[in-house]
Image (cartoon, rainbow, N blue to C red; front, side, top):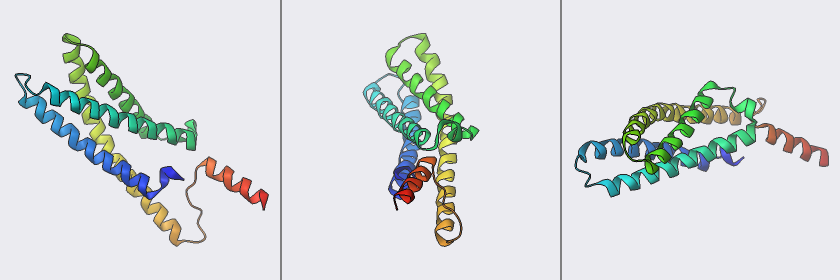
Length: 163
């Protein structure tokens, strides 16, 4: 399955690391730019952040499709992760479209969501390595069943019926 392939996992991990770097750079530039001279750079960073958050949303949607809504969100951390991502997207959109007092409030809330996102990103990297270790262990053991999604089970049952 594509979502559990090594290239996909490595891409998500690299994207997570880049996102963490982006958040710290964005915090630094926002603190330095007291006169608004770097507003163009800040806007570019916001659009890059929005793009990355959309990729994370697509990953969540693909996992929900592959594993099923109830099964995927049985893990409360994954539910919390989805809420933080969707909330972050909403706050970025509000930040881009609204000026004034609400913009200042949204920036504070967005900073909180970014910190939560960093925490969740570290957890996601640990989860990716955890699944990698399980798969590695399952590949060594011929008697144990590999982790598979319901779709993979359905496809293998369908193929075995054809034979």
